[in-house]
Amino acid sequence: MGLQQARGNRGFRGAPERSGRVVPVRTGAREMPSRGLVFVVVGLIGAATTEAADQLGSNRDIRPILSDNCFGCQGPDDRDRKAGLRLDTPPQAVDSGLPPIVLGKPEASELNARILADDADVIMPPPESHKTLSVEQKATLRRWIAEGAAYEPHWA
Image (cartoon, rainbow, N blue to C red; front, side):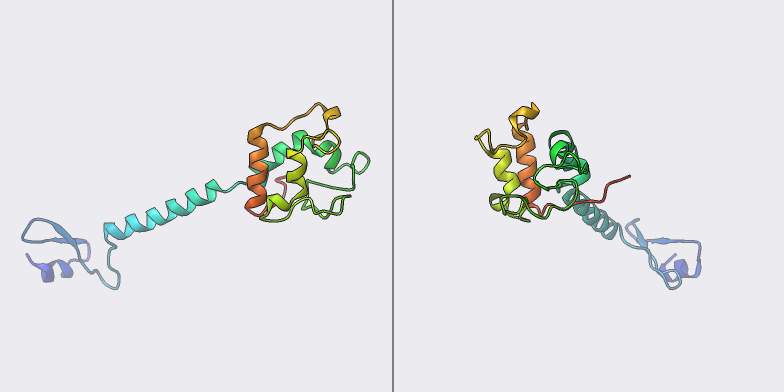
């Protein structure tokens, strides 16, 4: 039974070689992909998924920090908003004239300067709010700014 004989049988997908190994056989216009190709495609998809998972998401990683610590003064409520700044949407400017977030540049961002400040008149959140950011939360916000501070639409 050779390769020619296997081609005549449309239901048969492989033909044994003399070594006993089954090799893919052309059946009509399509050829079965090799396992190596399947592994390469699966590997590429896995690598892309891992890279995307490593990047911070504004809804998953940032919004909870800002909601718990910042939205009381810089959130959606016009009556309670201080300095005319909203952090729940892509921000425009701060009273000091410095942009709160400079995309990709945490060292030039007012938000980063305020969360790292030692001065009680400058630090955010302010001491009277009785809220503080952990070292991990500050690092997460800094990394988000460095990654481009992408805002995602709110889920609701």
